[in-house]
Length: 151
Image (cartoon, rainbow, N blue to C red; front, side, top):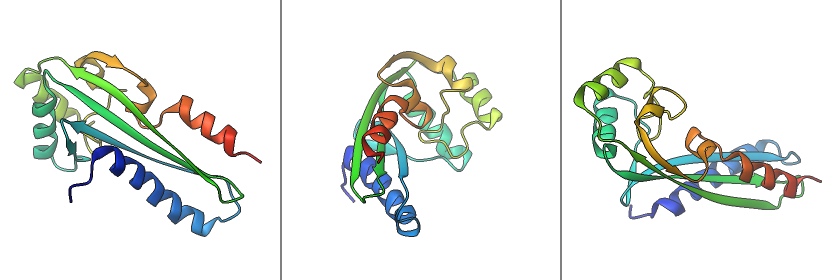
C-alpha cells in the first residue's frame, strides 16, 4: 500500500469517525486509532500467537513509536484531529520473558502485541511522550479536542 504510518493512523481515526457520525449527525463524536511502528513498518493488532511473538522479537531492545490518531466531529459537523506520537524503548527481552508474556494472553488484539498497562510495563526501559497514548487514547489531547468542539 505504501501509506506512511502517520497518515494511516489519522486515516483510520477519520474512517471510524465517519461511520459513527453518519448515524449520529447532530452528536459530538470521538474516534481514535493506535498504531505501533517499528522503523517504517506498522505492526499488526495481533490475533495469533505467532504474530505477537514476531512483534515482541522486533521490539526487543529497540525504540518504537506509538501513533495515536484522534478525531472529533462537533454537532456543527466541523472535524478536528490530532496525531500524538510517543517513543517507547523495550529492554532486550529474553525468550522466557516472551514465552511468559504470550502465555498471559494480554497480547490478543493489541497493536504491536503488547499492553503497556499490564505485564508489558516491565519491558519498558524508556518512554517519551504520552503514556495514555500507548494505552490507547491520548487523554490530554483528547480533552483539548473535545473542549474545542463543544457547543
